[in-house]
Length: 448
Image (tube, rainbow, N blue to C red):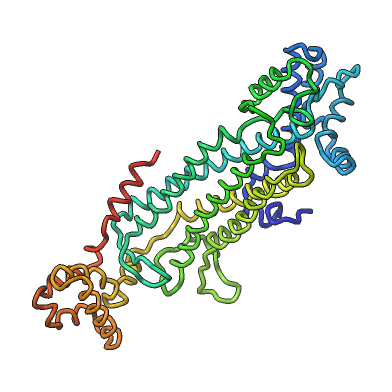
């Protein structure tokens, strides 16, 4: 019976993905143990460290369908770790005691950590796929809305005009940095861990480094320079990466939620019949994907912090910090998978209302153009004086409920320098988009 949100038969498809769930499943993890034991046997058989006959017999039984998972659970509860249970079952499956050569010179942490790295490799490939898709969809939005005016907001107040393409390009630039980070961390993280009890490989009197090199090559991993049993910056870096990606997705969800407010109405999540509806208020269209992203990435950030805590390990083999990784790393990846999935739903089907964006710019009667007016007047009466003058006129416009342009045109210190046409040009949001379009182009030009 599932008890966690990511294993729930009801919620799993919202807060995670089936593919990511498989990566961190008991079955996949156990198969990774078997893959490593098989690779170790092949390498040591070639090196003559164990009999070739034993290597072939061990490899023959390194299949998940030969492992009794119920028995493995019992063994794990008794022993404290699943690897020894797997080795014990492999030994029993092999004929003529050839299974005694299984796990030759290895320790539990060697197999556990290397299996985790193999799972991380599969998980990162899924993350990479989603990031690539999100990047593509964001690029299309940025390109399409390069010069679509909308209001920029500061402290939740209307500030000055920007473009919706500019907003999307800002998020896109972060997604692209995450893709670069992913490329950069792989060589540091996708490293095997085969080093024996205290990391010195003393268990193999000969062929130790050759075994380590051969095992890593078999598994497609880098060979470590030194054991990392209790040096866990690599795993913590993965957690930090997941947290950073989640933060950007959270920023996306926050802006979408705010822009979906009834009083704003600038964007909507993709529409499906019944999605986002209320049980009591038929008119509602709630931000479903954004809400789930927010929840998932908030928990994800705590998991990233927990992986930092797991770095504080004791001596050469730790008592507890290591197990933190077992608890939070699978859930961190699963939660990110859910957030990525929901983010793709948003950006691949986002409904953009350019008319509502323009309506919101105009709702203040031109007050949001006060900076443009101040800068334009500054050339004639000085920037500081222009600021104070426009400030007073903004207050008057609010009090009198009149357009700012009318008050500007009536003011004698202003109309002596600029006529109505010039002032109207200063008050046109399309003329005060700055370098938004250029910045969108710079982001798009750097896309891979």
